[in-house]
Length: 354
Ligand SMILES: Nc1ncnc2c1ncn2[C@@H]1O[C@H](COP(=O)(O)OP(=O)(O)O)[C@@H](O)[C@H]1O
Ligand SMILES: [Mg+2]
Image (cartoon, rainbow, N blue to C red; front, side, top):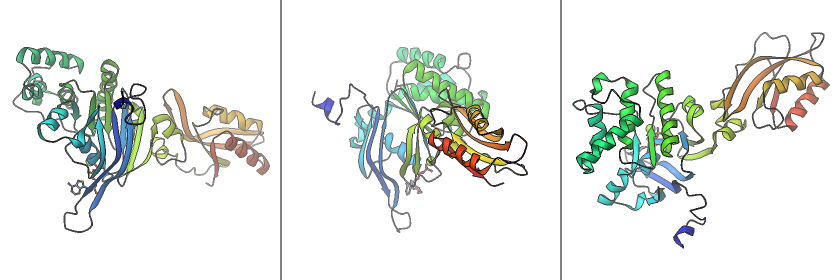
């Protein structure tokens, strides 16, 4: 029982499948200058059975983070725990054994050209010494699971980009891992194929209860499939949380990327107000904003905006053009009171100068 309480919280209450404590990775500078701090004290705790996105610009530390999770890279300090295993503490054969239970999917599946889809999926099982009969049973299961039935005897040259990535995912799942780590899994795919592969990851999570970590630079991937998202900047976490909370927080760094600001209006003969909503209990749609404007004797029209539905809830950045009923501009007093009421209800609203 003592072990259960070792991390300060009972494991059975809410076990975390991935725990990073003060993870730091420093690389010596290639030319002998200042060392590069790729990860700088990362604390991250991920719940099982969810799809987690990790985003950030090039050089932010995303690949280093995933390499630490798979044990390919030793942390300079800190703790890396994946599915109950202290990955950073292992070496040699113990590390290789642990790594087999962490599924990996890469941007390019790098399949063996001389082998069929099924033989590529079987490859990690062969290396792990799984007996032939069991291997064949498992491969048949995986082919069905990733939607490759009928294509299992094709060679990579006879498969589409999406099918090749399905083989890559099946291979990552071969050892029945509880965690699937995906580094830019859709970056080489077109939009339609990306959606299919994201649909597959969602489906796998539902069927297997697997935890998925997706590293990506594509905000569309995060919007489409992630439950939670973490932003890395210069080796540090600058924002993390449930996708809806992060997207709906107009002050946070990620909301503008997840829900881009509309362009500044031009040539509109009216007063234009920018409204960011999503965090508000009272204003849940742009229609709610328009109805309030009417209480202030204004005609409001939606002139631009980005509206997304995330987790069944509308999150938007919209621009409203406000006019008086007679077509003249809305009064200053009316505008001030309107903005104050929005502000009190959690909508970030401000006048835009055209
Ligand atoms: N093996 C290495 N040796 C030295 N510096 C490295 C090494 N790997 C990564 N870095 C540096 O660490 C930082 C983070 O890199 P990386 O994790 O690849 O970022 P990302 O995947 O977000 O683009 C960068 O400044 C990169 O140059
Ligand atoms: Mg990278």
